[in-house]
Image 1 (cartoon, rainbow, N blue to C red):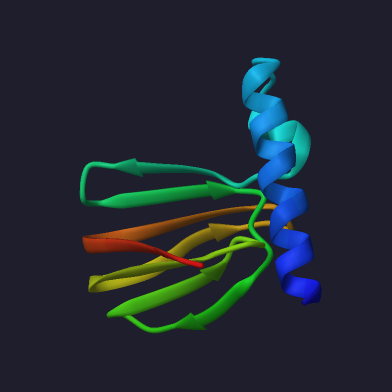
Image 2 (image 1 turned 90 degrees about the horizontal axis):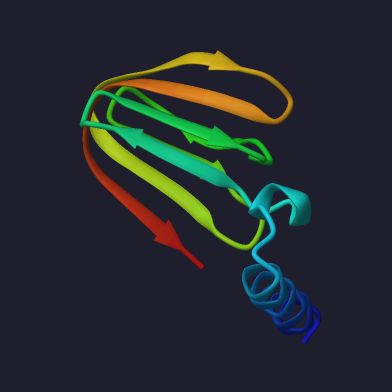
Length: 95
């Protein structure tokens, strides 16, 4: 019940931000960039859930971002930003 309530609030916030044409960063919504198949960048992450050279799972708040590939490595990470390098073969968003 609580998770459903949080999801409803997050969805409502996203819709309002889109209608007002405001940047998603203002609502704490993660911003992601996939640069080719070699590098992934994310702002507003909430931590790395699992990490290996073949798969990385990142907490994005309302979703988990799962990267799969080969030779994956954490290139940089701060409290709110991270960068993953390697051969990224697949990116999944899991709610």
